[in-house]
Image 1 (cartoon, one colour):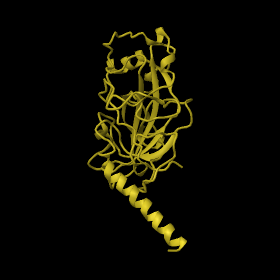
Image 2 (cartoon, one colour; image 1 turned 135 degrees about the vertical axis):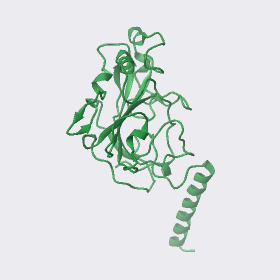
Image 3 (cartoon, rainbow, N blue to C red; image 1 turned 30 degrees about the vertical axis):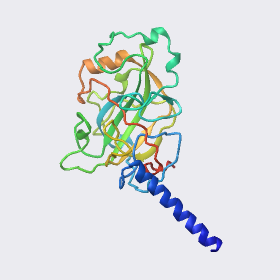
Image 4 (cartoon, rainbow, N blue to C red; image 1 turned 90 degrees about the vertical axis):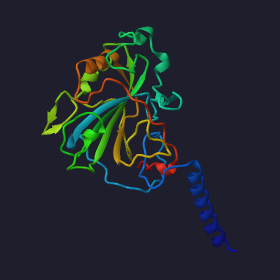
Length: 265
């Protein structure tokens, strides 16, 4: 057997081994790239491609929601919070918070449930190419006339603290804001690094590496945490919002299988 033949056989064996490993692991097949991921890694071998969504300023904001603990892993949020629906990652500065920052003004009964000072949350501003009104759940991002939209999620991970000098969530809320005829958040976070943009899917605890999301989403994830005042989250919930959000959601565990991830360019 010549060297070329041995090389070809070796390459084929590697492909078959990878395929067998994927099957043994029970990975979902035939789906596009999945989310969440480690944004510090550019690795990915999923070959399903789709047109990336435009900038959020060219789309309609359709939903805002939060997850307790970061679904993604990044340079500023790499402390493991464990597995399961309440796992994910915490901001690196979590252990260095002061007693004052950790004091809970709501004593466990704040208007925004499932979040207390010291928690990490990942906020998703979901945008769609559909002509819709913002509302509850990801269903608000679709319509009968627009069943296959371009979707884009702008993402910021926050370390929640009791501090009026920290960022105010209301600065990033919707509150009926319109810009050039499009529904828009009042602002999106800045100063936490250049967002990492990549192709992925929807998230949430009902999905795993075995049960994949079919939706195609352009993600834009900021790599560093920022401190957010817990009182502002409670105000957002107490005054009501069109998204009907009054609690933080669970996480989808990190997707690590290369065949379920898109390469980051």
